[in-house]
Length: 239
Image (cartoon, rainbow, N blue to C red; front, top):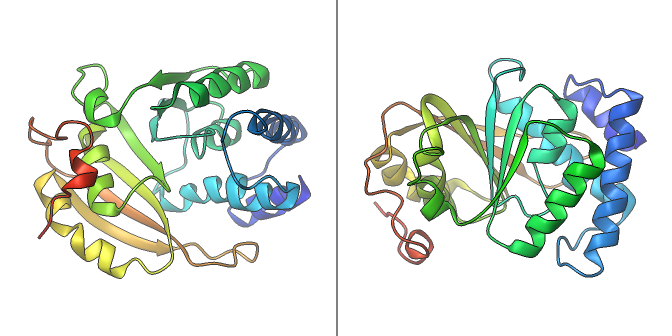
């Protein structure tokens, strides 16, 4: 895990030997399970360190204060546990909820969380459109994350309802995103958000254009959002 270790240092993070061993086990389990459950197309050791593990940790660039105890994070559409599990390994005191709609992927998440001995990490099987209307999840998270899940207007509707007022939503995006951000403007405002910053991720290991779109929650989200399953993707809120 030398590539991950060096990249983490550039992010201001120091991973100790025990944490690096957790990442090593995570990699091994990911590759093993990927033979029977479609978790990722990226399995090469070096690429997983950069494109999955280090990329997940770049979320810390979007935090104004150090991540620590009491911070409750929601990872929407987590898939193989990214970015939630890498963040939990790096910051053991945070509380993490992994939301995944596919039962087989959730089986992997339960297995790897137990294998890594992680505490204060919850796995929920369900769709964001439904879970966001449940009292125990609505506006309960200081930080909501989404990585490679959907277009930004759709992501905003799926994610902001989970954010506490004064919390933040961080979307990990890559490539040309200016038009996507423009199209998301109405959804951000309507759902109680305010675009704080679009931050370019600049690390020697990251060769493509990657960004953190950081949206602060400034007002409660109207109760009718998100709309029923499938609608935010089929008919995104548009300008």
